[in-house]
Image (cartoon, rainbow, N blue to C red; front, top):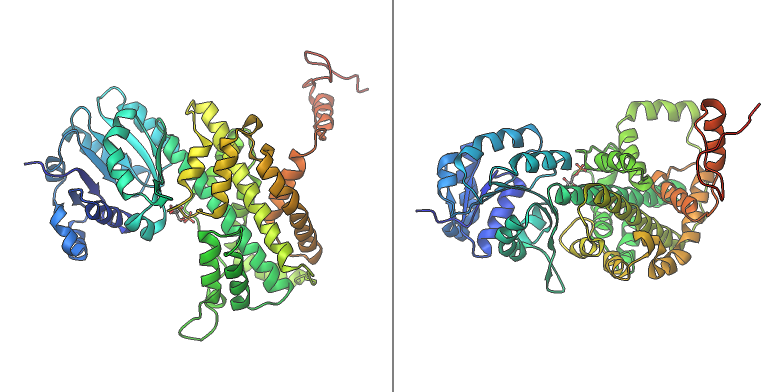
Length: 465
Ligand code: 6PG
C-alpha cells in the first residue's frame, strides 16, 4: 500500500539532509539510491526519524511506495545522469506526477526537459536549493520553477522544510520551466562575487597592510555586527580566525590558493553576456578562480616581475564601505540579469519575492537583502536597483569608499577584479553620455555598419574619406 508523501532519490549529502528534514516535519518519505549499500547507513543516521522513512532497494518499489499523484525529488548529479534517470522513471509514472530536479542544473536542460514532458501529463520541476548541508537539514532557501499543478503538490512540503525569515518561508514558485534553476544560477553568481570581494579585502589587508589572518577575521566579525552582516561575512571571519591543529598556524595560511568551481558562476556570466548584460563583479570572481588555478605561472611571473606592492593607507571604515558598495553592485547586476532573462523567457520573475526568499537559508543571505526587497517593492525605474531612492542613498555614501579602495589597490599593485568590475559598471551606468558614439563611427568607418544620429530616425553613414 502506497504510504509516502514524497520520494527522495539520491542519498548524497544534500539528498539525505532534505529527506531527514522532510521526515522531521511529519512527512512520510520513501528513499532510494543508485548504490543500494548507501541506504542502510542513511537509515541508521536517521535514528528515530526512520519511523517515517521507507527505504526501497529498487526504482519500481520506490515509485510504488508513493501516494498519487506522485512527487519525486531527485538529488543526483546534473546533466546526463538526470536525463538517464528521466528515461528510467517516466515509464513507471502516471498522469499528474511530478519529478523535481533539486540539483544545480543548467536551466537550458530544465527548459528542454519540461517542454519534452509537457504533453505527457507528467510535470517537471527545476528547483534550486541553497544553504549547503546544514541548510538542507534545518531550512534551505528554495527557488521553484514548473507548473502551477506541481506547485500545489509541493507547496505544503517545501514551505514546511524551508528556512524562515520573520516567520515567512523562504521558498516561492518563481515561474515556469527553467525559472527556478535560472534564479539559483544567478544566486550562485552573486555568491561567487561576494566571496571574491571579501577575499579581495582580505588580500588588501594581508598584502598591503601586513595584517595576519586572525586580525582580519576579527575585523570581519566586527563588520558582521553592522550593515555587512551576512552568512558569508560571518563564515569568512570564522575561517580566518581558525587555527590548524597540526601546525598551530592560521588555517587559511596552510590552504593552497587555488579555488575550483562547478560552473554556476561561469553560467551566470555566459548567460548575462548572451542577454546583452554585463555582470562584471561575477565575471571578476569567475576569472579570479580561473587565474588561481595557474599557480605555477603566477609563481614564475612573480619571480620575473616581482610583486609590486606598496602601502594602502585605507581606514577600516573605508574598506567596510567599499565592500558594502561592491555587495550592492553585484546584487544589482544579478537582478538585472534576472530581469533580462525574465523578459526573454517570459517568466514574469518578481525581484522583490526573490530578494525575500534569499533573506534566510541560502548562502548569500544578508542584512542587505531585506533592503533590496523593500527597494524592489518601491518599483525602481526600469527594474534597475541602482535607480531606487533607498539604494541610491546608500551608494552615495559607499561609492567614494569603493573608488578610494580600488584606486589605492591599483596604485599598490594589488588585484581587485570584482570590486573594480563593480565600480566600472557603476561609472559606466551613471554617465548619460558615454563613448559608444565613437564605437558607432569606427564600425561605420571600417564596415559601413551605419549609425544612429542624435535627434533623427533611421540609419546613417559618414563620409569618412
Ligand atoms: C548553495 C551553493 C551550492 C554550490 C556551492 C559550490 O547555494 O548552497 O551555491 O549550491 O554548489 O556553493 O559551488 P562551486 O563549487 O561552484 O563553488
